[in-house]
Image 1 (tube, rainbow, N blue to C red):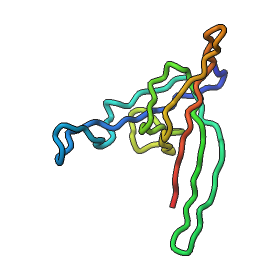
Image 2: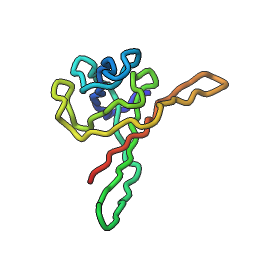
Image 3: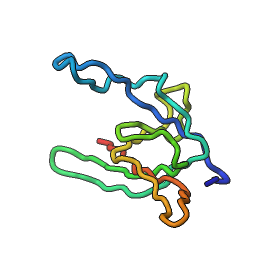
Image 4: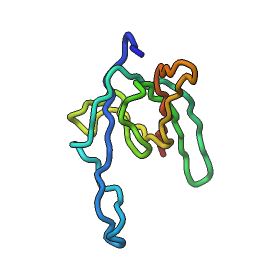
Length: 124
């Protein structure tokens, strides 16, 4: 699918390192600039926001969706940055991919128009 006004969205991934407490296991490390890729012709659309307020904390949960080609390399635990650049890991508004992406496929024709990936940002 082609979006007439789609943009380039940076997708960041953490590097894997050996767990110091269990050497047979890998754990997430820092964001690795070498694992950042550009998702072309995509966009981030609004979904919802909700406030979680209690006597000790004020928090807002912002949920959006990333719409992109089904072949885009995005997985749970990745970070996408709206308005960011591939070269600057601190640019743009960051959202986490907190669900496994899935692109629906038409069972009769095999057509996959796009992939909708749920995103989440927590502030507060």
